Image 1 (cartoon, rainbow, N blue to C red):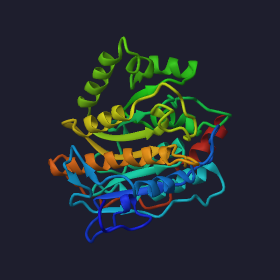
Image 2: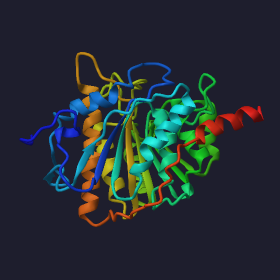
Image 3: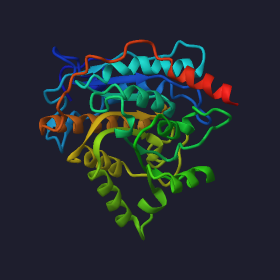
Length: 338
């Protein structure tokens, strides 16, 4: 490990002088969990566990940060009273980091962080307020395409569905193995959604062929991409304390290969990523260490893209700075139409 260590910083790396290249933002958001609790404490548990993750990445063939400037921001804890107000607070918190200069990595927190992240991403110069150019790549056990859960359309179980409603152009999913009839019908009918089910990618008779098709789908992506990793996409044995662990998921190496393949796609630019549904495991650090290792791989792949000339910072000096009212307005509009 590096001789210089700073507590509370991701990987224990102190921020060096210069413009920030990579920013880690812990988001302690937990308002709609429906099973296991504790995602609000997950981000800081992940940061603590990251102090034990090796800095050397064999694909990058360097120790992180490998010349990049990495900054870890303080924990975000929502102060607003309602869910919609907190979603708007999240937009305001993450939006400045979509300036085109740095790469944000969000640590959650429940998967409900995804819609405000997507809404904020419209400020990135590669998106330029046209969300139909944005692809979301989702690693998850659940489709997260429900219309609502327990009467709440912005539940963590609806995160991908609300992102489609926001206007993203494509949704690619892998690891999916727990979903409803309504979600199955939407996957079948919506051309924007491409889903690789765990029963195919993890089932020996068709596993290799299905996995090859998944990797090829990643290689052929173009334009801006946001990567969202719900850690329950991994097999439950690797992340036993996540909010809703599900057996039969991806292996650690499949997630690593997914991240590496996505970042090497010649015509795509990953503009941000999140690792979510982290819950600290009592008596063992396995869950939070696994999450920290995945986030570290994301950072290493971004650094690699920079070094290979596939990340060209484009400054956006016109990021909207007025407080977001989007989700509060959405709620009022939905209420008036009922």
